[in-house]
Length: 231
Image (tube, rainbow, N blue to C red; front, side, top):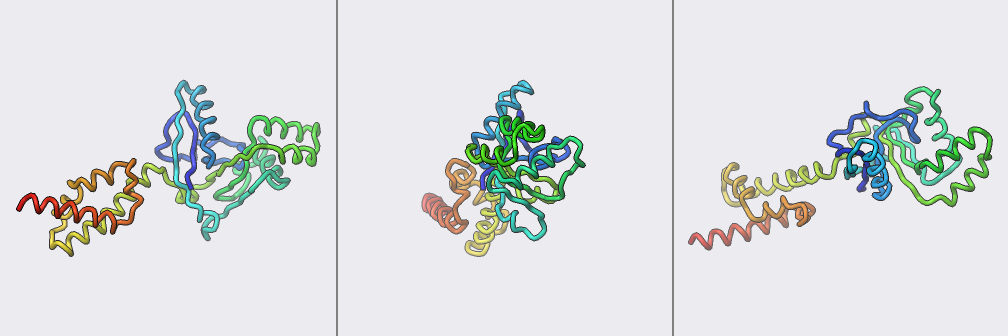
C-alpha cells in the first residue's frame, strides 16, 4: 500500500526519537494513505519551518497487521473504542508510551475533532452526541508506527525502487553466465551498459515492475542486434 508523510523536509531515515508525545494513536511515525491529507501537513509544517513542505512516499506492507511478531490495533471508523483510545493517548498526564502496540491504524482527530474532544472532556458534549457528529465526518486515515520493530514494515518508495532493480539484475546476470558462458564481470557489464538497463533505471518506464524473465528477453534481443552489427 502506498502511504505518505507530510513534513517540512524529505524523510530519508525514520527516527522515532523525534516523534512527539500525546498524539492520536500514540507516540510514533505517522503516515496516511490519503495523499491530500499528507499535502495539508506538508504545507502546515513547511510554514512553521520556512520551507515549501515535502511529501515522502512509502510502501507499507499490509501483512503488518497479520505479522506474528507485531502487536497491532486497527480502527476502521470513528467509534467509542477509538475515542477512548485517542483520549488516553492525548492525555498529557498519561504515561509515555500510553500503550504497547507496534502499529495502530485509524481515523485522524483533526483540528475540529480535537476541539470537540476538549468539549467532550469538559462535559460540554456527551459521548453519544460526539460520536453522532463523527458519523458525518469525512473519511480520514493514519497509521502510527510506534516501535523500532514496526519499521520493518515500511520502506521509502524510492529505496524500494532501487531494491527492485537490484533483485531484477541478479538473476539476469546469473542467466547470462550460464546461457552465454560469460564470466560474471562480463555479464554484469553487458547488462549495466545496455539500453535495456538504461530504460530499467528510468523510473517513468516502470520496467522495474516487470518480471526479470521479460527484462532478460529484451536484453537478449539487444545483444543479438549488437552481434549482428559486429559481424
